[in-house]
Length: 490
Ligand code: NAD
Image 1 (spheres, rainbow, N blue to C red):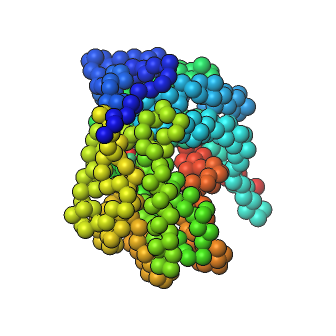
Image 2 (image 1 turned 30 degrees about the horizontal axis):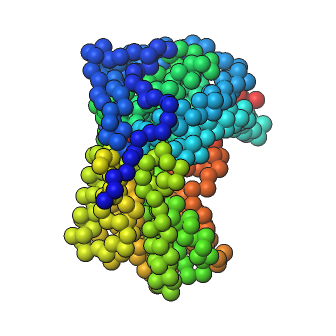
């Protein structure tokens, strides 16, 4: 077997990651660091400061002090201009940020460029515009009174994020948090700390005052120091469902406002009257893009029996064309999984699938031909029933199960038969069926004849164990603001 090279073809170097507190990069007081590993080569990318309660205290205190400073009281157009500038600077440093993102995550560079970094910039551009048109409620109560609501920032907000879309997701929270006038402490994933580290500098360069944006690196304990901190007013968290549950407990004594974007096991429902060409191409993306490490990936595919064989034949053939390899090769479709721990988790699920009697139509193993790195072949599984762990639990890798169905009722029962409720895709050319079935799916987002199509004004989030609250447009603004209703007696 030929060994593949996975070296980065770039002049851009990885960075060491320090905390960012009150406008300055700083190591941990106790000097503790941990290693950051490139998942495609298993080489050390650098070291990361390991934050303790002490750094969290410093960051929260800087954020609390800045809350009383100029930031929240800047004229709207000035704050909006700074937020817009952050987006501009992200685009100016796009090559560097995309490279760091791919080194950290193992995802293809073309994907970092075309999705992660562009969207990170757009998150700021979008909220820079949106914030200038946010209105408040007013009610005239006969000739008795006028009521109107005024908005203020929630206060100090902790932003805790996962590793799959590091900059995209951090900016999805940071942009509206800043737009609404808050100060923040970011806690990026310990697995992918580099782009957030650069983002802190970008915010300062754009004119964000010291203390408004702070960042502490570290593991779960560092996040927990933030979620239990009495001076933190709200936590916006994206990550695993079990972590969300832990955060809820730790935030309970101080009654923090919480926004949760959690795990998913999203269904992709394909009726026989679909346009199969379009369905197959989009299903390839919804199954395997970003190594299947997108919370919205459709990992449970239900296909109407009349086209089950035809779908599988073409879906398997297209999947076999996908190239797993060096994230820095333009022709790579699937890069490395993000870490050794996650790689082992995905491989463990493939073993479980075997034990459960699965048939592997493609993949099912670690990719061959790599001396180093955490590569897994795109995997299509059939032969598993609705009670299988691989059908019910989030694997978060390039692994999908395909199950035939006969009726709408039957497929809806299976689709809704999990604790998760993040998103779903539905493929049919029957408009009535699309509305009828779409409206019965227990998920925060349902796509009809598409996937991952987003308008940042729309509500984004999950129901059941996939989340609490919605982000996007006015929904983000509501989370990051407090309202005071003022009543004037006439
Ligand atoms: P994770 O929950 O393990 O970690 C997420 C973040 O929480 C990290 O920064 C981590 O250090 C921190 N953390 C861990 N334990 C903590 C604790 N007790 N208190 C406070 N912080 C703590 O998740 P992950 O493995 O990094 O990410 C993968 C998960 O994220 C998947 O379940 C995926 O579905 C989910 N996700 C959801 C969405 C969405 O929008 N719903 C988007 C992306 C990813």
